[in-house]
Length: 253
Length: 253
DNA sequence: GAGTGGTCTAGACCACCAC
DNA sequence: TGGTGGTCTAGACCACTCT
Image (tube, rainbow over all chains, first blue to last red; front, side, top):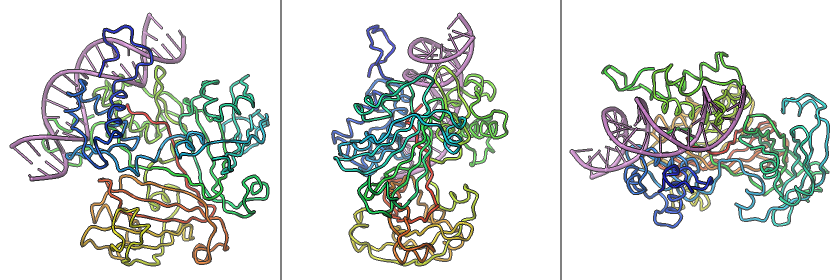
């Protein structure tokens, strides 16, 4: 393991922190099968010596993998590779595009509308803006392997003068990618509320299901890295689409 | 801030780590209103001096509060109190009982069944046991303020010889509390899958809704601290009950 | 008792942001 | 440029688990 700060001035600025590099290394260790599920990893002190880093750096790498669900540590017993079922579940923000790929499907979309609208009171309140302020509304049918699985309606609060072209969205597929790459808006947190509703006529037609079919309704407020609300989004998913998530107890170090 | 390990031999074993004590202190700082939403906290180095701890300990306290959604740090800018909306959303395991209390309601339950059953193939596979192994089945109607909001059916894999009495469950209300306090089983992680289904006749009657009403269906596999599957649970919630959760980007230190 | 993870320290330097 | 958080180190001691 190489210190990112010593002698070598040619270190590219893409250099990652040591603990991330180490985390990647450990990840490979597990994925290669050298360490099976539920089996113990080498001890922290041992890893520190092996990779020539401080024990603290080892611990940071382990904490990182623990948060990703790949590992867990038990006081006095050791650190173990997580069971396979846990490893697959993400606990983090995933765009529909990324999530679909992770599930082994091909993501797609049909853009039904993309226009500037005035905020109504409810949305204005959620996004902390004044009613009538302009928002970008995007309504899409999300596809998995070419078949409609969900209906998604976003209301975006864009920075002054920012523009998003329909063409750009069609090309990249992912709205979040566009926000990050083009506008520098980094989603950091989202607040979600999940419930069930019956499909109305319009929704039913777009999702190709019967009126009254139970749909999974998910509302979300997405916050930027400065914790400013950026998007309100309403999603309706037809069965058998499922939300999957991993929940765990807290813990710092 | 007092070191938990120095001189004073009379330190009770309930002594919490310094960083937790500090986290509690900072929490109060925010709740007392001295530091409003989005406002900057004192710098890490300053907190270290103020509370007589190392900067690393301060950082651990901050990481803890960050995971709880109370705080966030921006490189080069500072550390800020989170907006109120974020603070209320838990990202962690919460029993129905705790969650209901957090929402300001009074939790209740009606136990419909509590019996030993043989595992069927589907559940056996999820819990990593052989079919026909005995499981404890608990079916309950969950109440909020006396009104039914959800139907919950748990299948528990108990340790050899362990017993749970109906009376105990009725008294404490919370199955998870019972698992922790009586059997020493500590829930550490759960894998959830959420979707929507139509209410069948039986469910509809218990939840006091019409047949066909869209229900929020949540399946869960709960793992103990050793990552052994302990419970499979199926929950059905009637509108307007909502699952609320906070999702964030990862991050270690 | 031996080995593991958990907590804590004091100090160093880097990367980023705002003025 | 000065202040902030981010990374890293080396060493100490505690708490827990297993045998």
